[in-house]
Image (tube, rainbow, N blue to C red; front, side, top):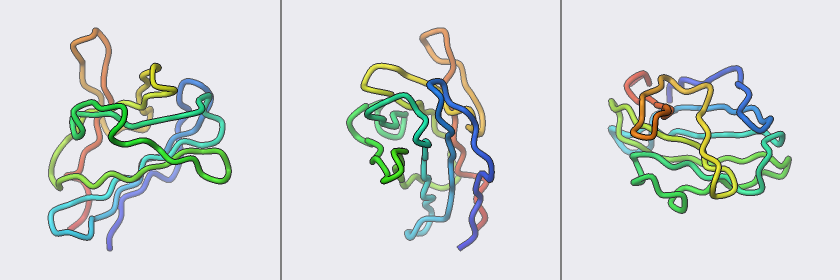
Length: 121
């Protein structure tokens, strides 16, 4: 299965390093996106909210790894661009600094964008 992975992480507000990994999904036309934050992130709970889950802070919680970091995998449709942000402790919304792009939002800031059109067939 071909993969596009970020080989180096970026620092997220709050002190953690973040990584986004992409691989073709098990089902045709899908991409499995794994979001990871390292143990340095200043949060006890983290979620990924975006247009793929109606910006729900409950739909995609990130599990805590044994090393104290966080991770979750979301399966999305191939060939799209999705807005998202990390939600720390249910209230702090932060961008992914290793996002594929950024797009202005209605709140005067920007949303992170993850693209699924750059993963090999």
